[in-house]
Length: 88
Image 1 (cartoon, rainbow, N blue to C red):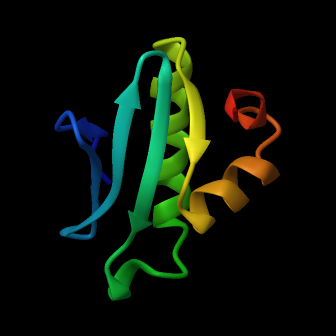
Image 2 (cartoon, rainbow, N blue to C red; image 1 turned 90 degrees about the horizontal axis):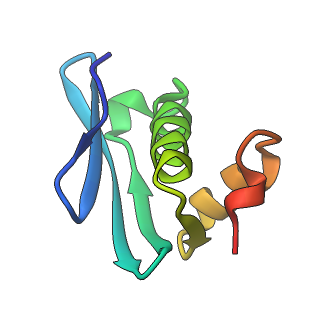
């Protein structure tokens, strides 16, 4: 597994030679998560969840609120005791 990368529009994280990603947009102090995806080989391994945890930790460190557009991101944040307070 690699560290989280932020391209300015997409967070990326590599595992097993493949990349999971989350597309996002910033508007002021709010991050809109539009889409989260992992390659088929990583699905069911928790890769997307690890990406979301790293992404949410980064948002928290930057004092951003999160508005999940993606259904996966919304469900993950709703289940997260540590990061659900970021949802707005």
